[in-house]
Image (tube, rainbow, N blue to C red):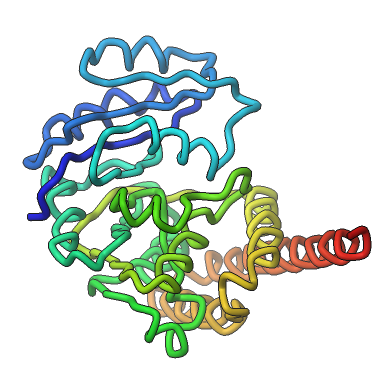
Length: 298
């Protein structure tokens, strides 16, 4: 096991229904963190009161308007003391007591900068969501280097701060997360790591339970924001296309739903994909217009 201290960072907003269980799961790990930090965006439920019942957990309260995915996590990492910093979202529950030990294991290789884990669906996940998770987060671990980018395309940069661990020295070397950034801060720093010669690892044995049953409106908004940020970062992502990967996921999911006899769910998933596509395209086009306008203004 890689030597060094371990910090865990959890951004929260109105997490009262889940934060106690998450903190208990972290405190019960076979490899215990040296530090747990909760960064709360001015919750108006009992989140902060619950966190304060765990005296070894450090609470950082920020104004809700000051939160953003990159800047807030960057602030927390720099406030932490760990040689390795693990990020979890408030709704990502370690699947077992070996989660931290498993996500730390790849750091035995001194070239590894980032390790991200596997997301397993919740009990209430839709059939389509279960298949999407099984497509995206497979049972085989993967070590990715710069040489793999031509073959993997956009998949080379896949990473998720739902459940990820960073080597502090590597993180600081590439400049950390952007601030501000609306989403995909994990993908963009993964690209920087790879282009700087570091290795990124998908560790399939480091599992959390995490999934969403998004509405069509939520799916549109989520993919709109992704479209905006990915278009703005095409230079970092080597202009890797998203279309092929998206079609592969859709085909895999529809075939799985057909095998399982979920015909109505397949119909809903097709509509869901329409909202994803339209949201992504609208975000992409808006970002292009913004970049074009900014270029003319310079």
